[in-house]
Amino acid sequence: MEAAEVRTEEPLSKKRKLEEEDDDEENTYGIKPKAVVHRLCPYLDTINRQVLDFDFEKLCSISLSRINVYACLVCGKYFQGRGTNTHAYLHSVGESHHVYLNLHTLKFYCLPDNYEIIDSSLDDIKYVLNPTFTQDQIEALDVSDKLSRAIDGTMYLPGIVGLNNIKANDYCNVILQALSHVAPLRNYFLRENNYAKVKRPPGDSSFLLVQRFGELMRKLWNPRNFKAHVSPHEMLQAVVLWSRKKFQFTEQGDPIEFLSWFLNALHLALNGTKKPHSSVVYRTLLGSMRIYTRKIPPIELEERQREALLTTQEYAEVSTESPFLYLTCDLPPPPLFKDEFRENIIPQVNLYTLLTKFNAQSEKEYKTYKENFMKRFEITKLPPYLILYIKRFTKNTFFVEKNPTIVNFPIKNVDFGDILTPEIKAKHLHTNYDLVANIVHDGEPGKGTYRVHVLHKGTGQWYEMQDLHVTGILPQMITLTEAYIQIYELKTDSKKSEPSG
Image (spheres, rainbow, N blue to C red):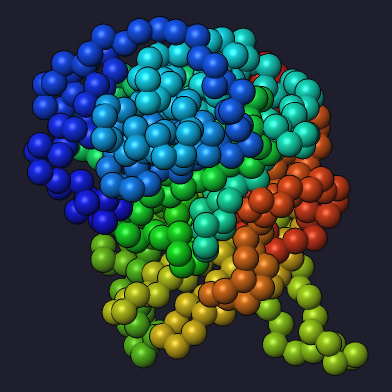
């Protein structure tokens, strides 16, 4: 990305040549385009749809410029310009590749003759570059079991397609795949009109994250893809840019850290505020809790002194209201000993046991550098979609340790009302949730790989996705994995999702 910025700083005269004859409107330097004649093109049979890939950054393969870029529909490469001596023009003459698509205006041209091509047989190419969805199509996504066919004959389910691993971005891929099955979030981003009107200050690049996520959602759910997988290249470049390189796709990261940053970044980019309904992110995922905190007297004091301190204001219990986008579940420490067969015991724990942390009664000690505290957590509002983070990794100065404890959880009808106080539960009409996504970590701490299980509602089938690999999986196999992040959907009598219009 840095190289691209350097290479585009070309002399003004050269820029004018490269931008010559842009479409329909004046180019960057105010040069009026020449009139373009519409003609039938004799070269349409040279188009090779199997090499077309619009997932990568839209920049010229020679100049690395993002200005006025065309895709050669014969070889799939990107070139700048259309006028005489531009890279696209020279490529058309040198290679006898004649059909090009402007990646911004979605118009087709024949070079070097430089006339616009109007032909309905090219609509499928335009749709792959920029998929669009109607309200009816969106409402049908979760009830349809219709398979789609890629150019190479591969059959796939829209929404169940692999994501390319560029180098070490599987930790991002699993989050993006999981969020693509959170229906209100997906429905909102499938309609570009929902966020195209969001006003941002001049020069604010955060909205690029919103645009790229929307493009990725539309490509993942596109029923007319040319291939049965998608590359998140542009999405990840926006992540690297806006996170100021905190998250990279060249080195492994933690999905929960990426999820937390990404949801908050999306919320802010959509002009979200602290109000619960100020963005689709908060409307879908935001819950609230009450945290009770009390300070623990120093253990070196005598019991009488400790009891005296407990009666002071400093050591009184204090409650604070806190919103949350996910709940952190703490695993019990794994056993230190081996069983009678000298093999490691694989510990197990019930999900409901982990959730007692939030029942307003269970206390847990938290240590800081100077002081220790006891805390209780009380859920005061459950969100439409609830994210659980099962804390498996413990970091200290020297190493990262992984807790391998298996969490036993039901796939359907998880009643989170069991952890609510009676007065809070009375305010909730529904408290039962179904699992829709389950992210798993395999391997050693700090290394290993991530995969995700998602439910395709139209077929009722669960699928396991690990980058490009997509396979069906039995629900009972999901519960045997080392679950790391889970997304649950609230069950209601009338299954109303986020309006997409």
